[in-house]
Length: 443
Image (cartoon, rainbow, N blue to C red):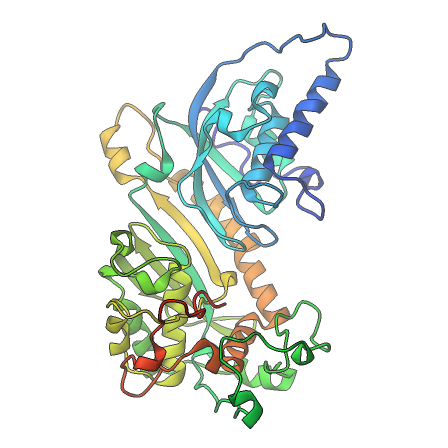
């Protein structure tokens, strides 16, 4: 693997990673790095180019905490994982200054695009990279020394020149961490006043309803959303899921297994769109686990591919079904043509565990190294525990993110049109989204 076992987890100089306020996007950072390299040339001839070093197509095996980032994929004027990774590769000399102004020049691609705030214990990014950099004996360690601690390069693997990690990825495994108190029965919803009842449910809240006393960092931005007291949260965190509820949760997630039409679990897709048909191989629910006084479940879903927000909406529906005692038969109804509004569970609990390349590995067995994370298992687990799991737990304990999510759902239940949450497990006419309605993609 050409030195790719070295350096993972050996972070040096983490302050050099520009992940604080005011960080530039990938292209701006690349241009700045290129300009700095030009300045270092000193009194060299005007227009003189650096010596060309051979590039090789590689798969980078990376992990990252998505907290504070606007997702993985490089994008103009926003802070992304790829932006900081590209900057570190340029600074390390793995990307020449001639290619430092545009990530397209090195054919950078990814196996799975993660959204804002979503983490990855393992992901694959491919590009054309300089492996033998002068005066850099270990390129992996060098790159890691230039990355913020929440992004790690575990190693690299040489690939075929036409390697495309998105196309050649057979399937992906995601994990979602969920505190079990979200399954507590939903309390009675607040009654609407006569004046409120006359306001259309799609209307945004009046400015007078905006809360001014919300705790710092809270997403509970208006008076309709209850903010749980420390005493209320203590009661919720003391909840322990019973065997019957746990079994219903498992049965609920099992309903997603197989090839289904998931048009209700993304945005901007119609029932007739063939791309909505996705194949879920497995959806496992762990035994409950106690972490710092709160009980958690680990959900692991193995699927061929996923649409935007699909996993978060799959989790969100099960949470709403359990807490409202809605029959599980509702789930099969969501695969039919009627369009309903399913809430996304918080991004906080979601992480990509790893992409799988089984077909590629079989096809090129003996010719190219397999693209697997096995050699880095211990490093990945240590990274996941420290920078992903601990981060999820810390933010939940500090901000009560999952409770806040439920309070927002309950405070605006009428506006979000949850009439499909009922004792019959049917989708009534009033819950069906018609063309022109604005109920889609709620947080």
